[in-house]
Length: 281
Image 1 (tube, helix red, strand yellow):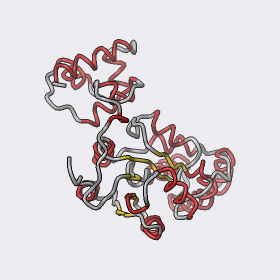
Image 2: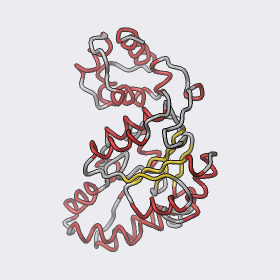
Image 3: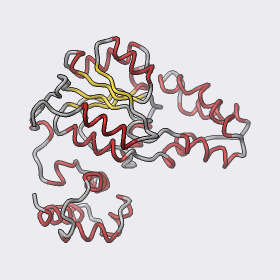
Image 4: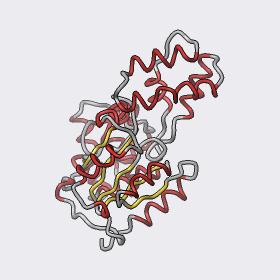
C-alpha cells in the first residue's frame, strides 16, 4: 500500500470509529500535524510505531488498519540459528523499568526513594505469582512505608514508557516468527498496558502472565508452561530478558537466550535484530 492509500485507509478507519482528528491525536498521543500529513499521504514512510499507536487508539489490529493479510497467513521463518518462536520480557525490555514510578511515589508521599523501593520488593513476588491480591499488596505496601494508602498500579501505568526501538523490533519479528510475551507482572497490569497503548496491539502466539500461571521467573513452572504454549522444540525458542538469572533458567531447558539492557536501548536492540536475522526472507 502506498502512502496515499494508507492515508485514505486511516481516514476511513478514524471516521468509522466516530473520532475527529483532534480526538484521535489525543488518544494516540500524536501531534495534529503528523496525523493530517499521514491522512493526506504527505509522509512517505510513517513509523510503524506511529501506525501501531493509531491502530490501538481505534481499537483495531495493525493488519486490519493497513489492509494487510492477517497474521495467521504470514510466512513463518526461522532465524539463522534455528529459532522459530521468540519470547519478549515486558518490564526492562519492551517498556523501561519502573524507577520513575518509585520516584514519583516517593515525591508524592515524602518517603525516601530507597525506603519505597525496599518496601515494594517485600511483596512484589507474591502479587506477581497471584498469591496476594492487588488490594492486599497496596495495603501492605502503604503500611510499610507509613502512609495511609497507595495505588501502585496507577503510578506504574502513569509513568511507564515504551522502549520504542524494541517495540518496533517486536512488530517486525511478529511478521516473520511466532512471538509471545513472558513477564513477571501483577494481575491486570498487562491488560492495562495494552489498553493504554504502552504495548503493541498484536495477536500474540502466547502470553505468559506470571499472575495467571502462579509462578514467576526464574521458577521452572513458568518456563515449562511457556514451552508448552510455544509448541516448538526448546532449541527453537529465543528468550529476551533483562535479568541474567531469568535467562540462565531458560538456557538450562535448552532455550536460546539474549540479555537486554534498557539503559542502552539502541545498542541492545541492534543485538536483538542481529539474532533475529532470518535464514531467508
